[in-house]
Length: 122
View 1 (tube, helix red, strand yellow):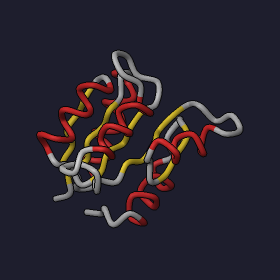
View 2: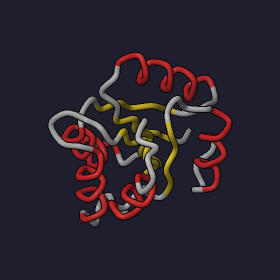
View 3: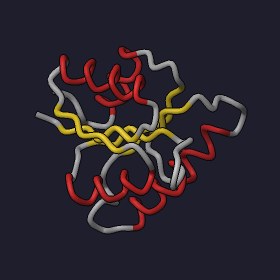
């Protein structure tokens, strides 16, 4: 069962996304800020990280850079999930080390396609 780390500070978003992923056969672990996301990525070794970019304590861009800089977590695929959809936001996420980018609200079929393209499917 593939393990997905959701790094999201909004409780409603976390709940919705985790329930939908679990119903589709994924194991889910959750972090509520960027710093916890980095720690959880190291401790849990997920198959994929879904990273909100606007997070307390440490934003998603910085958390992704740290995950990429650590040999233990560098290969974990990261998909940026964000309400930021201004020109340049996708590029900013990719420069931080994200493998892909998706906007909120999450369209589940599109997200699952992006996850599968990165080799993460139940």
